[in-house]
Image (tube, rainbow, N blue to C red):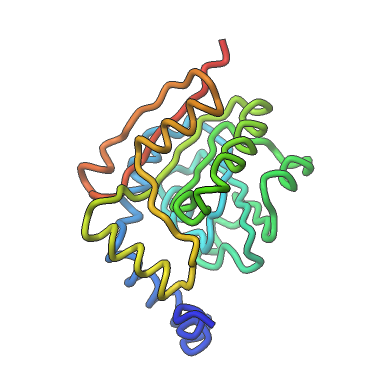
Amino acid sequence: MSIGQLVRRTLGSKWFPRVGRYYRSIFVDLKKVAKFMSKEIPENAHILDIGGGDGELLTHLMAMRNDISATMIDLNINIGNSIPAKFKNRVNLLPGTDIDKYLETDLRKPNCIVISDVIHHIPPSDRKEFFKKLYDLIKKTKALILIKDVEPGHYISGLGYLSDRYISGDKNASLVSKAQVISMSENIFGNITAKETDLFIEDNPNYLLSIMADWK
């Protein structure tokens, strides 16, 4: 059992989210992430949140944009616990679901895909396959992709890495740079338009990339 799992069990469902929210704020300001994502998300968009976890980021987005809806998929079976009741009619939660399973559903397909702090949890040897699955998805949807992750080389990045490895217990955690994400996207998607938002300026070392494949 990881330290994080032990703390979750000890604090219970009432107190763990509150403590977890404070702990997370050491590494990232999710309100700032949502602010910059909100500027990129198309009007009346349906979002696919891949690996959305407790749904705190999605909650911030829902509060900022009353025109959007979302589907969240995650390999975990316990997801969306931070989403308040007032937003749940705008969110489909699909626990234990990967991209392949999602594509088999008849749910509304997205025009915007959000991937926040997911890629650095994927082992480097498996990232190419993940981007291939993303390509299968965007071929069908022509969706904009918003990728939030953490740039290596900053003390906060290092602390986050140690937290992932030794508190969360994720032995596969490995930081991924903006340049690496863009390179993988180009290699798998072909021609792309990649834009770096100002999140990195406001909440360094967190970055947010807006990526659109060129379908012409």
